[in-house]
Image 1: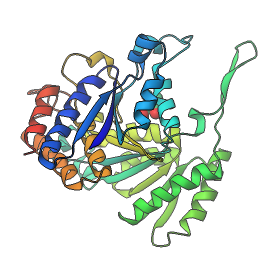
Image 2: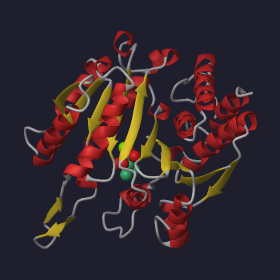
Image 3: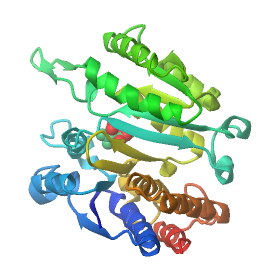
Image 4: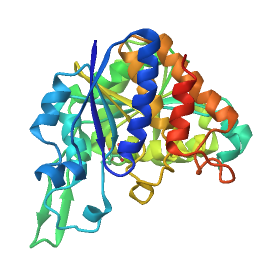
Length: 350
Ligand code: IPM
Ligand code: MG
């Protein structure tokens, strides 16, 4: 039996999560996994129901589960209100911190049948297959923040400790060892002291992995390289905010941000979520691409020890792409709905 906490969240979150659950149920039927799904609140919907973007019941459920599947968090009604006391995103940041999920792993892969959907030339995106290790519980996201000078000045502090850098560096090097053995640290060490600490610690860690080629790159240069020569990268290791920005950029390579899954690990329970946001304009219309969440569910199957099932889910996604069973941001002329995509993928797992 595997207990899965489902945090569908806001906007398109519930729709894409529903399709991933369908797919997990199909995998369960075939592999007798014994999934038990429990639904809990996070984000704007949790604020509406309880006043808290991360209710205690949600935390407790996640902590007692084998894994967490999350949809998306965020609502524009909070974005346009700088004075809002609570924000949906606080729920997301807090669950990451509370569960100790310090490494967010975001694989970036190009799909042959999506080459046309990418703004980049086919010659650039063929063979793109890299993975970003984004630090998830430190840096400017979690440093002290506030106002001074009667509110006329604002600050967000970026801090990192040696230990915070070391633990994710180790995971990233281990991953590189099982891939093409190339790790690139992305930082801004020409300007930021935290980046100089990262360079220091990661260089030291690299000595323990002599078979991995280690290099480093400034984040501005990396932003350029991601569109100029994305196949250069194998494992990218970076801090929280750089990783946030670079993975949205990298998603353009695949042709749609609706394709990119992620896993967040660090403690005994792992969390799986698409990298896209809550897309509130698209909510309730059946137009959201569920593939990123379905691929996140595949990462979850890997994590739970069902690699064959994970592989079947990935193959079913590829089949849907090949057959053109895709949502409107990929196929304008003949779009499938969110649930049609989910039904096709779940139906291919037999
Ligand atoms: C992501 C998102 C979040 C982040 C937001 C919603 C707080 O952009 O998971 O990439 O910045 O981490
Ligand atoms: Mg982001």
